[in-house]
Length: 319
Figure 1 (spheres, rainbow, N blue to C red):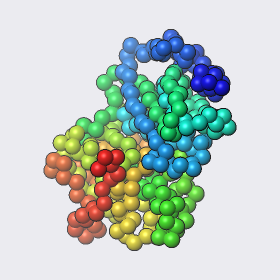
Figure 2: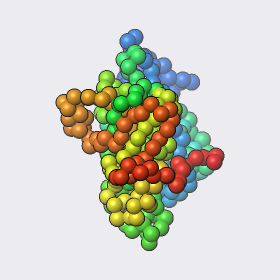
Figure 3: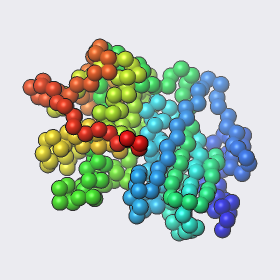
């Protein structure tokens, strides 16, 4: 098959233009989408590269799932509803079995989230996957990093450090004994908190998804909002295997391990219990600290309120 036949066989048929309310879908030089007059378009894009974002021998089904899930997580952090995606797939060779498994997983997750593939590119080269995702929000209602205020409570969804521990366990099973099935799943197939994100749209003052670790990503909220934060280490929800580690190792993985794809968000002081209960009914949420007026100062506090100095930094591609 050439690239056009591969696209037709494995992708186009699974994403008819009629499903997305498109004026024009796959098959032309560009797609044409209809955005409702009372909505704003929310756009994000992520690239996953073999050997950097996933193991070289990772299953194509898992690669496909993760490449889409991390984009869904970005849209969730904006409080938006996902609508359309484009896919740029670079493959080292024409392995139709690999492509079939990849496309099946990709198309299934897209269907579950009401996403329609509207275009992209297919080329030969080192394995990498780029997904651009488009969501919509009511005009002026998108969540941002810049709205946190002193006195707001800081929350995270789910437990932290699961994917980081699973990665360590695969690399060094002696220092990091067997990860749980759930932790392995979180590494290969993270769950985007899409429903939590849309629920937060009219509640939260700020939000971000945790991709590089809580330490780095909460820092982005503080910088954008011109505020600080006090985080109580005892309130951080550690993934199960982290509880077996030396306390410092567990803290470092939870704060800077990355790949959690949970949401970190701020809620106004005095948020009603009914609101918190609604959020809790979607997924577990944990209050881990408070926004302060100390601009960009992020403090981690032990049980005796002594400061904890983090020893590792978040992953950076060009550090």
